[in-house]
Image (cartoon, rainbow, N blue to C red; front, side, top):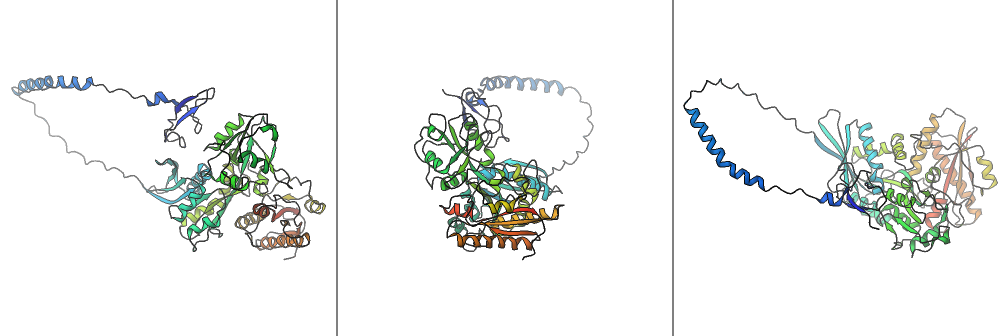
Length: 539
């Protein structure tokens, strides 16, 4: 049954649809409002109706003109025969008032890339940066005429100048291209850059260096179903079959009988690219997938249909039920603060800001520093992503977990080590092919050092447990896992963090399949636990 068609006219407040005059079709029975801003829609026929011009107005004026000329002539002749009273000289006119010119606007820098980050998170970070760090007044957001970019604008304290940061929402890939071509000074990305993409900036710029690649949070790609759907977990193999070919009856995977209705973001989006690479092995996916730009709209449709299965980013789960994911040899794991921050969730992804190093633009450097601070990380958490603020903000969970469930398949030695401890939310991982801590680990352990220094309980220290992938035999992997824990321990001691002990479990307790490079990378990790007791003196 066809729905009602209408346009949003909430200009300046609707993210995109009002300015682009997009005609939307709302199914019968649904509220006739804009899916983006919630304002009532104007029916298409009413919006297109134009008032007719009144042609009679010109004819009437043409007929009256001779009468007005004749009447004015008669009045002039009458007044000519009578003396006119003296008219006092007009007072000297005052000089015209000077108009105050509008404050000049100066663009500090431009950020381009991922729509997921540019939709809310990055504008919120920029707004907070201008207000809190630069002390700008009246910070507002202005939608640009091109429909895909916006400007966050504020006045400097003396009021003589307006400063702005421009944000261009396109795609993760386009953000790197803009950065390489100097169309932007910061690229926002929903996934890690590949060596081929990093080569766009030439050999003189290393985009994966610590001063160029900035991990600002963690998110995940989530498979969601309606709360009425009985399914609570699904394997990556099942997702590959469902999204990779013709839509089959959902009964085989526990859905209600009938075809599964598939929803996902456009193929150019960062979330779909990550899903395609890790689940579909690069396949474009089924032609039956319904593609929607807005993650909130995907979750809205899925929540209302027990036969639907959607792929969204973590902040857009909404009222849907997120499915726990698993592979052969791993336990089902749902997307939560802990599973995402530790990156144990199979489709977790880091959120990045990329720059061409530091020292080129002081405003860019100051913004990156703000984003990685506690204040910036609280904004990351408020936007629905997983940040790493050392203090809880607006209900966000702490960097140190109050309670942690120990996996039922954990070895007895592991259970004894962590008994009574509190899990640190992040795991430490290493740069590819190296024993050197990766960029996220360098930032995370500095946060942990700050938090440990502020805690009243001074008798606490960090327990480190290392893990490896399954490449090589256990006799090799067990000491290797201990060495990894010891290397992290050295980095913690340099920052003044007390270390209680270091241990290793080899290739035990994998969090991902060892059958893929991405899975092996997740399994090469070091867990951190806060325990009571005297710190080890061993360097």
